[in-house]
Amino acid sequence: MSSYIIEGGRPLSGSIEPKGAKNEALQVISAVLLTDEEVTISNVPEILDIKNLIATLEVMGVKVSRLEEGKYSFKADGVDIEYSRSADFVKRCAALRGSVMLVGPLLTRFGKAYFPKPGGDKIGRRRVDTHIDGMCRLGATALYDAQMKAYSLDASAGLSGCYMLLDEASVTGTANIVMASVLAKGVTTIYNAACEPYVQQLCKMLCSMGAKIEGIGSNLLTITGVENLHGTGHRILPDMIEVGSFIGMAAINQSSITIKNVSFDDLGIIPEAFRRLGVKLERRGDDILVPHQESYEIESFMDGSIMTLADAPWPGLTPDLLSVMLVVATQCKGSVLIHQKMFESRLFFVDKLIDMGAQIILCDPHRAVVIGHDHKIQLRANRMASPDIRAGIAMLLAAMSAKGTSVIDNIEQIDRGYQQIDQRLNALGANIVRE
Image (tube, rainbow, N blue to C red):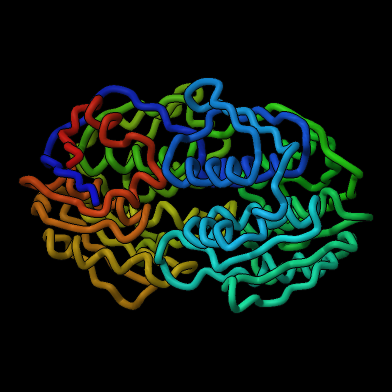
């Protein structure tokens, strides 16, 4: 297990560019299974979760070539179907949450797929009901295989389009059902579909492969099934979570940095959410300048009540940035209620921040009140262990602003979502050593 040793209190300066979006990459890389022709994908983040997904495709028989850093070609013309039904495949998928994206393509193209309970962050219950229910509505049968510890899905008779109202606007659930629907017979209508930019990107890529999808960007998708899909080229969006993390790093360290090539129009409400914490942002073309500020004052609502930052399905605030915003708020002026609605364990890392001197009241598993220090009291160094990707990066922000030298263990969790983050931040003036 590796650790970061962080010397806190160092100002940052310069520019940094986000890598490709992890959540989009998991979807579009899985979609290469839908065709036997070559698919080229660029701006691929070379992080642990993506590398594991690509390795899984390779052992399945997909031909993978790394053309250059962040650019890969895939050709799924020799998929070993029997391996995809093996215990080793199920074991691999159970260790990687992104593997759920393989189910839709395998089921619609090859007629069968195993669906193990996926791994990933331990942030509370993360249901897969939407995925399985959607596949069954398309005509698949699902039986639990106790020996494999996975659901066995069968669509050997083929999938057929239908109307479905999703019980939740699940991003991965929507993506999985869309991929299963593009080769199904007839028309599939998905209402209450997730409409995040990453789902939009997946749909655009599928359309470039010959799929027929209407309503992209809305919560009502209509997919007309086609006989087959062909190859294409696709570029992944910059990761909005990295963009938000870099904004937070600049603010909590009272630093000025420029974040390059952010695809600003795809950031949604994220810039405005940071402005509510008092962080000034300047859009310069497709870049964001975060200027130096001595103080960041949290807004109140118009009636004078405490500001609330809460996650919500797109175009609401992504839950993946609430941990970052919570840490930033510890050094702002004023108070804010952080309401993490979607996952009940993502706020449990705040006890480490309290040990560092942060003023936080954990109301319940979903809500925390933060009383900011206004940079009058510096956080103290601490030793912590990263429980998941987003808590890990939040801990890194806290350590970078703290007085003294902090240690973060289990940084493999951070590696799952952030590519070479220590080297990239050190180039801005941070002092982070990997041990």
